[in-house]
Structure formats: structure tokens, C-alpha cells
Amino acid sequence: MKKYHLLFYLILLNLTVTANNRTEALLSILKSNKPDYIFVVAHRGDWRHAPENSIAAIKSAISIGADMVEIDIQKTKDGDFVLMHDNSIDRTTNGKGYINNYTVKELKNFKLRYNSGELSKETIPTLKEALSACKGKILVNIDKGENYLSDIEPIIKEAGMENYIILKGRDSVNDVKKKLSLYKNIIYMPIVDLDTSGAILYIDSFLKDFQPIAMEIGFKTDDFEQLSYIDKIAESNCRIWINTLWESLCGGHDDEKAVNDPDNSWGWVLKNKATIIQTDRPEELITYLKQKGLRKIDW
Image 1 (cartoon, rainbow, N blue to C red):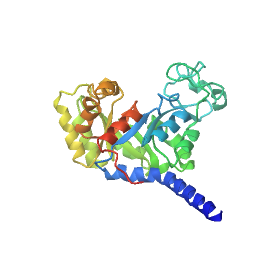
Image 2: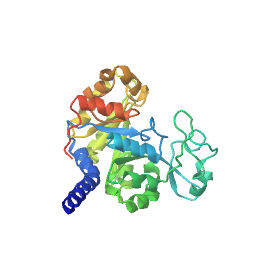
Image 3: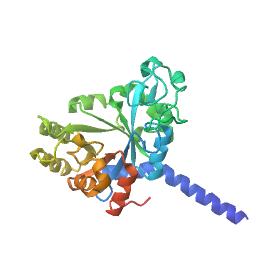
Image 4: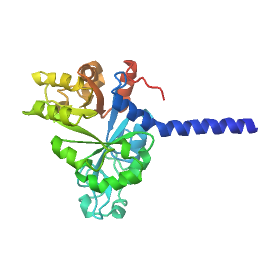
């Protein structure tokens, strides 16, 4: 009997270590730009199976194997931070009003809605609660986080997540360097719209003076010469982040097109050097990437 107890303990210990090491392994691959592993980012969590920006959506994203979860934050009346895309609770809860008019305690009285509009049992999570759910299991992109860096840094540090947070923005390279001077461990990725004037100068400034791990690119159409900028980014050992959330972000090669024609959606962005894809269909994308041999990893 003792032998079986020991075996059970060892299995449990191995599972615990594996879970704790997952984010470290993902971070290592992210920084190495491993070409046969494409990162999948679950936009607002796995909101097709749970309310967006909920703990359940985060846990679902983890369970299907997403590498990163994108969450949105808003500041409350009492100076805390909760997960919410909109600045009001009207669309996603059974309440009404702006978030900055409520304390966290007051917000906890409301229930989150599924995408269908049906009420769930989920409440609005704080950033602290969300990071606790993510720790050791998934990387985190905090949307709008760069606007509140000094406020959220203590929350991130308390959660032990300093190395596993990704922020993105459109600030100049000099502004980013100043902003991040006190926060060395947080990963920052610049965002550039390729079909705007000055795009190549913006790209060059970051490649020269910042050397980001990745750069998010957006483009409304897929028939313009600026797509050649992608090669310049990729040749600098910088990952390409493409959002396939809707047409205007990826030249029409979006998630909805992928439902019936994945090769002309996700396949197209892969051919154009994407190694990080943010999606509203993480489960389907992971299945597609596995079929293409693009999820190779040894845990």
C-alpha cells in the first residue's frame, strides 16, 4: 500500500511541477523565436465557452492549450482594477453604468453574460484574481495595461507574474524606454499599422533601439507593397503578431473565414511570417496548427 501511495505522490508532484513550469517553458520559446511553435492568444479568454474576461474564460483557454490570454482592464472607483473591455458594465453584465462609478465590492453584485446574452454565475474578476488563475499556466497580455503601469505593477509583482506579462502599444520607442525604465521584466511589443504613413520608420526605430521580442502588425488589405515590411521584422529575429479577430486587422484573412477556409485565413497569415496569432477561435486554431506540425514542444 505504501508503494502505491508513493507512486501517487510522485505522479502528483510531477503534475504540479509541470504546471508550474509551463509559463517558464512558454517564455523561453517566445524569446527564442522557435519556428515550429506558433503561439495562440485567446482574445478575452475563451469567450465562446464562458463570459469574456471571466475567470471561467481564462480557465477554459488554459484547458484547451492556449499559450497566452488577452485580458482588458478598467479602473474602479476605489482605485482597483477589474477585467472588462468596455468602460461600462452595460453590455457584459446585468448591471448598468460606468466602472469608475463603482467600487470592486459593488461590482461583485453583478453577473457576467455569455456572448448569447444569457446570464452566468460568473462575477467580474479583479486583476489580482485573474493573475492568480493564470500563474504557472499561461502568459498574460494586459490590454490597456501600458496606460496604468505604475498602478498595476504592484499587483503584478504581488502575484509573482513580473516575467510573464506582455504589454503592447503605439508609443514612440523613446517614450516606451522611459516608461519601462523601472519595469525591466515586463515584455513590451510595439503595434504598427502597416498601411499608414511612417510605418517603416516606426518599425526601424524599434528594431534599432529596442529589439522587441515581437511586433504586432495590422493591415486592412493584403495587396499593398508594405507587406514587404514583414520580412524586415522577421529577419531581425522578431516574432510577428497578427490578429485574426476581424477582417480589417489582417487583410480579410480573419477567424470567420477560417471556419470554412482555414488555409486562406490562418494558413495565409502563417505564410506571411506570423508566429503569434490572436484569435477568437483558439480551440480550432490549435487543432489546425497541430495538423500542420506547428505546435511542437516538449513539456
